[in-house]
Amino acid sequence: MNGRGEMMTLEEDVPLTKRAILEEARTFDLEIVTKLACTNRRITRIACLESCVNITELNLSGNFLRGIQGLENLVKLRKLILTSNRIESLKNIEQIPSLQHLLIQDNKISSPEDFEHLKCLPNLQSVYFQNHGGDLPNPVCKVRHYKIKVLDLLPDLRNLDGERKPSKNLFNVDVTLLEPEGGVGGLEDAEGREYCFAPLEENIDTDELVRPAKALLAEMHTLNISAKDEISKAKKNLL
Image (cartoon, rainbow, N blue to C red; front, top):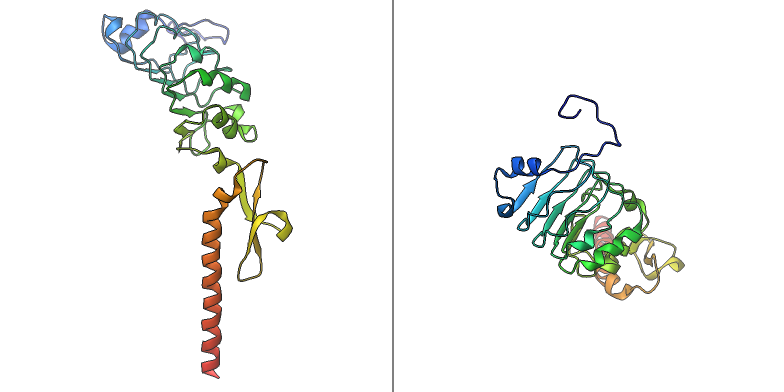
């Protein structure tokens, strides 16, 4: 329902207005606004922000935004929250080079090609396409290895979907139980099963990734052997 009590259609254009900005900011001077939250107002288009040159944090979550535009004058913007809209592309996000944190969960971004727009953000530190637990995802989150694609473009990113200091290697290697010939660097446990480390893609530094796990499994193997020896001694003493 809109302000007149009439049912709103999906095609209706409801831009962000100066009045809404002033109401939320509780001021009469847009230039002094540093933080602004206009949430759950059914806004379909970003507008009227050209005078808000000192905004550092903008929250437009819970609206009907279809794209990213009208932010080119926000030269101090560091945090942008666009969660739960209808945005299909990251186009124009490159117009905010000051941006450090982007939260865009629960939208309609479906193509990894959109990640290219993020390359033009030299100060970007964190991006959320979904929450850490996997809820509120974009369709692109279903693309296999989408996190690796993001990190290939943004190797210095500090936080991806809530994963702090992410490394693409964390999403690139599967440590599992395999047949002896199925992986690299196999270790046999006390039951005779071999643990192998299987890279999912080529050109991965498996030595660096596997070394800590191999050391742990080797220690477990040693403990199992020691336990078996102690059990054998105990059985002999009982005879």
